[in-house]
Image (cartoon, rainbow, N blue to C red; front, side, top):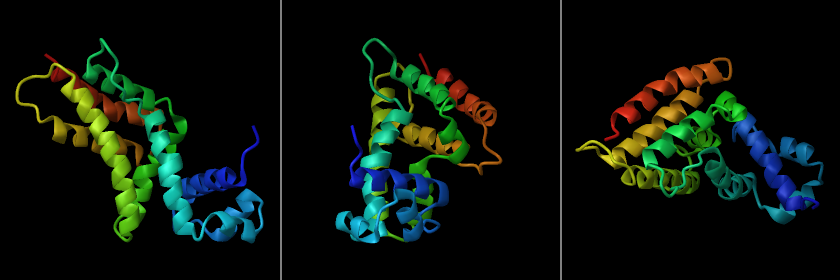
Length: 189
């Protein structure tokens, strides 16, 4: 199936913003990457901001579900699904080397733009709620605050994959994340 111009624009914007950040991506870069005239770009989107907010909704949000496979599986402890996902993340080379696209955009844009903060928070809340659901479908030791634990898991993963590309590697991610995995295993009843 041939990709529509709109889809081509969104894919190009995702790639460029992921690599260069929002402020490091110019309209000229987007036009060059898409290979389309300026008028065509503005036919679909009024501004770079509108394009990137659409990328959050239509590219990053679905990819979060792909990167972090956190669905409840019948007969599987939720905490085991989380642990399995933590290992699977290490196999996502682009994610480990370039960091989480949502977190990168969050760091750059949420402090300065309420629209970005709102859109990014929707995706973050969805991810946190999936982890919370998995934790609530687990046999954990008494007294565990699943809500704060879900945020701790996200913060640890994002922190370990948000190092500079020269500091990031699968080996480094796994050596960092093993402490989180060991902690999560210690919470199982």
